[in-house]
Image (tube, rainbow, N blue to C red; front, side):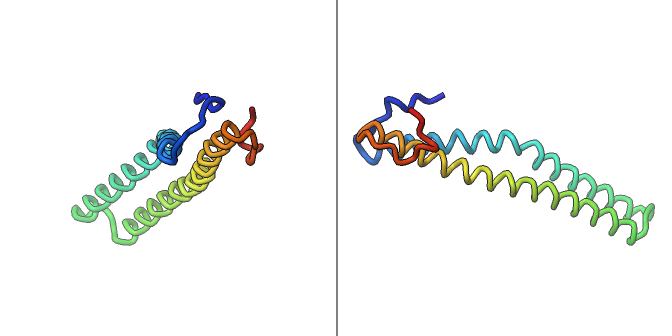
Length: 122
């Protein structure tokens, strides 16, 4: 965990570097939490499409059944992406919080004024 109590940048460049590091940590956490769901959904859709194609070519299924299978996979992928969209909104809020937490600590440590008490708790 980052020790913010000593963070008091003297330049905008130092502040930006710290913010970029915080954002990188937040995004890495998001990708770690969502990577398997997104990858798994894409793998499942790809496999289903390939199997449907093979079955159609061999004449094992009719077009109507293939359509139902593909539409079901489309709906399942859409549901995963909706969840990912929600998680993305949560990520965006976390990124905003990370930026202003860092800025808040910098201001508090330099000026003694806490502009973001909901994010900066000395």
